[in-house]
Length: 581
Figure 1 (cartoon, rainbow, N blue to C red):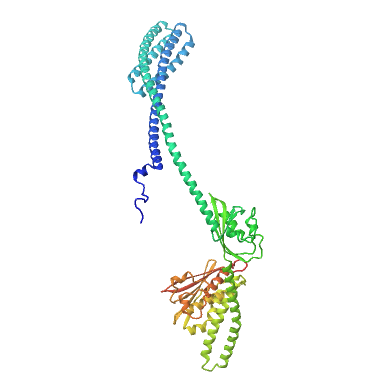
Figure 2 (figure 1 turned 60 degrees about the vertical axis):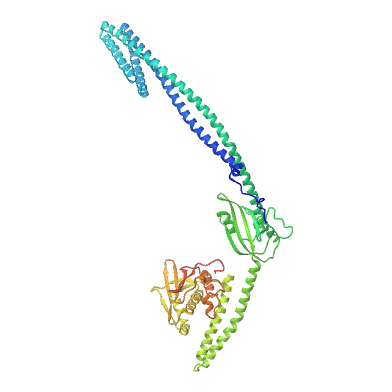
């Protein structure tokens, strides 16, 4: 039994709290709070210091304006007196210029006083006194212009008295404004010093924040690097011990590395340094692999024949390949080629095909000969009671012969040696002829055939023999699985650049579990196993023919409505490469 006192206990709350990661995290949070507080305080005091500085500048401008008003008024009085006593026209010009400047300074002082919200009435009164001062001097100058010098002299005395009153008011405003300026300077100094202190504190708090954060980042980077190294080691182990061949390449297909399984394919002392994939394996399909690098999408290649690997030639290998691009952003950085050797399986499959083809070929001749014998016997015993027996024997022999022919056809299509002979085909006539050939079969099975053909003739470019084989296969299947006293329906339609042929029977329908494998060669579903004489290659051959003609074959099936097979063909020939399969 285990000693409970020696068992490793889970860390308690206090231990978790004092772990380095926890301490660093708490320090970072505390430092962040201090940094945030210092930043807010610095911002507030800086704003106050800026506002105080702006107020100081405004006070200085106001004081300067007050001094300018006194100076301009004194100059205006002097210029007016000069003109009245000497008649100097230049003095009038300077007087008018001073009057315009005085108006600007008075407006600025009044506006500034209004903005501050204090002494508003005081500056308004100064403005009124200034207007009276200007009016008195203007009247004196006009009297001079009329030649009445004596009437202009008293105006100078009144202007002097009024100027003294204004000067007194301005001195009061100046003294008051200087007191305000002093307060503002002290406020500015205080806020500036506090702001500087806060910025110094902010720098310290940021340093306090950065140090533990840097430690945390360093620990994280260390842990990440360690995990990355472990991941690389695991990946390297997987690659080295994977049961498939692996080639690592640059994006330009220059080989970087290979694993031991692929190394076993090479000749002893084979050097791959500096080789490209095409130098090592010249038979690989270039277009698909080049497209993988260009598009960044994986490629799967099945049953690729290989006769040369480096310096080794005259090989017979068959590989399934998977090309995986390694991306860096939107660009392919490198490529990994996975190789599964399917040679034994492929060679065995091809040997089986050859054996099946040989057996089918050997059976074809005696079946044809026996068919001729049966026909001869039917003629000899035409009036005998053996006629029906011979007809059934002939029907069975025809079934066997057709199965043999189907097996031979499958081999041709799979090996890519069946060449299509395209010509003008009238589908209406073709379907009628095919149906006519099933009259005897329909009588035996007690099944009728209903044709739904369009009024117009449908002509396409296709292989007539292949079409007959294709439609005949589907029609034979439909009759075989149709209940007695029912009808098989064939519908011919044309739409745009395609034509379709539907073959419908009202049989029991195809089971759901059988639908996925329906076109698999040599496979029979539950219904196929229940019927005699099936080989499981009829539908597979039909699919091969449909593809060879550039079309498709599909089906729908359920227990209520039966099964419908649909052949879709292009109006113009559309065949595959070379083999046309």
